[in-house]
Image (tube, rainbow, N blue to C red; front, side, top):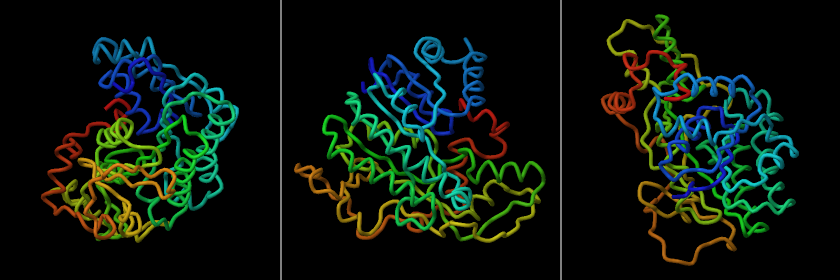
Amino acid sequence: MIFQDKTILVTGGTGSMGSKLDHRVLSGELGQPRKVIVFSRDEAKQHDMRMAYQNRGAATDEVIFRNFMNVLEFRIGDVRNFADVCSAIRDVDIVINAAALKQVPTCEYFPGQALMTNCVGALNIVRAIEENAYPVEVVVGISTDKACKPVNVMGMTKSLQERIFVSANILNPKTRFICVRYGNVLASRGSVIPLFLDQIRHGGPVTLTVPDMTRFLLSINQAVDTVFCALREANRGETYVPRAPSATVENIARALIGDRQIPVKIIGIRPGEKMHEIMVSEEEAHHCVRRGSYYAILPMLPELRCSSPQEPADLKKEFSSADTVLDLIGTIDLLRQHQLMPENVIDNATELLR
């Protein structure tokens, strides 16, 4: 039970991923935490989260509500500010770094801001632990498929973040620094499905960048599962990658539109976008092993390599979203499985606690 009697800090704890992490940790599925600290710079989102838990009251899972009342702590701060990070990490056992600038076009227009949040923020976490000798047990950096062979600022900064956390294991042997890397999270803020659903609600048009563009797809709970699995199993410096399916943006749009008379408009590729995402590069495939339903990318630094026998990943080339594409029926089934068809989604504002 990795969270039993532990204090957990979730940076970016009010975002799509962060709020779901908070919810799952509070459920007690991996142990009863001593404290869960939601760390973010957005006062409004913290207020909304607090009110959402309070208003659900007895209607929600009793364990989650009790844990919200007793162990959840909200803290205003910014990962880009070293003093804020030092204050937040004191007495923490586990750090999950979900703070990020993740919108690809935004990062293209404001690369300096992306660098500050995605790289300096990670460096501040490492420095806080190192310079204050904080006894943090494990740090998980949440990365993205865009960090693999990056062509955009978001991916470049996330790739650097991975390297910052991996290399931190060298000078901080008492703390285990690991990463997770995954693709598009279904229905997360800023992703394509909420956009398509909103466009369908308003009668269209549904805007496609390039019909044949592919993206890995996994639910937000599967993303959290990846973090939890890495916390349990990953060795120092390893990056966990889920073996997720993918779909074309055209099939995602067609699945959501169904038989509705909704026009579709092709708008072209956006700044910084890739046609196909890559989760494991061809170079990384040579030091990648299979762990159940995940790939574990072993650290490039030889000092961090584990000497025990590993099951090969059977990857002969890069793991690309162009390789595991669902057809239209498969895409519909996936969206139905996660209740993301238009008839299932009443109000995307409820995403906070879904």
